[in-house]
Length: 312
Image 1 (cartoon, one colour):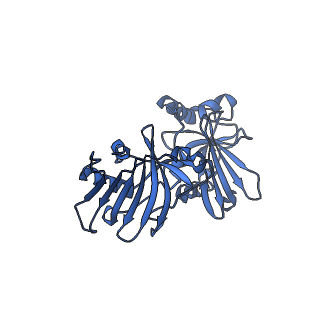
Image 2 (cartoon, one colour):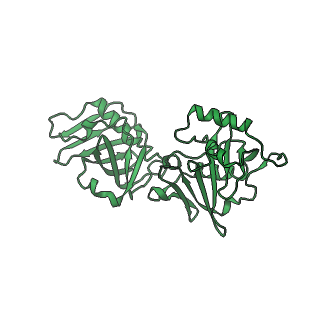
Image 3 (tube, rainbow, N blue to C red):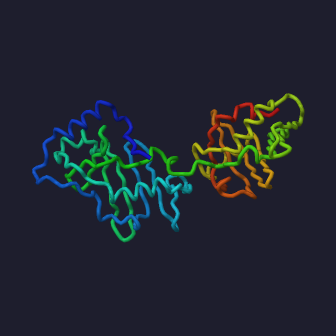
């Protein structure tokens, strides 16, 4: 994952930074041989990280009992890959060129109040806050520390996430279409729809609807719906504290597989978005279904059409 640019970074600013790297007066010190920026950082002692961007909500992750959670996102379990990549990079990234230490140049370098702040909390040590400034087109990022006038150009960009979504496993379900035996939908008015497959190899679907009219969907729409529930992706989350929106769901669903797996939940449509809450899961590996019972999740809806949640 490549480092992310600050919001609002324009081509003009990028050109200015590139020019600054090459043209600003070099601090009156001896030329510095390329060296590690944070050689003494022991990442094994880091137990939390907070990313603060001007005008945006903080992204905070914490390590609890060996597992990372996104604390700023209702303690949602994190996918540790991006977090570990950033942590491992910090003591290895090199500072390749000293930048101007003059206060009037910090704005151009992106190290003023617009700087991204990365704060590391460490066991047995004081928190360490890093200032992350502009990135240059040739590669590399300008950095500094809050209590130091020294600024540096790093050899590469730090891979920070734009949103908490980048640090979670967004795959809620990964159930192949061929494994789905039945999907049942129940509407608030008591209407029911079942989508059935007779075998793993069956290409045809059977639809059972009560009452039989008006028709909710055809077989093409039903096949799309099976694929949708089998491949749910998380787009946003909230917690059970905000469960009021789910007290009157637009539909309840039950998905059953040929291997005996069962997944139940409810869906609520709100302002063209679809929020889902899982009620139970059994017979699934966590790679197939993440058992996220404590959250209400907005799901990506490329296949869930508004007609799906309308009662017959």
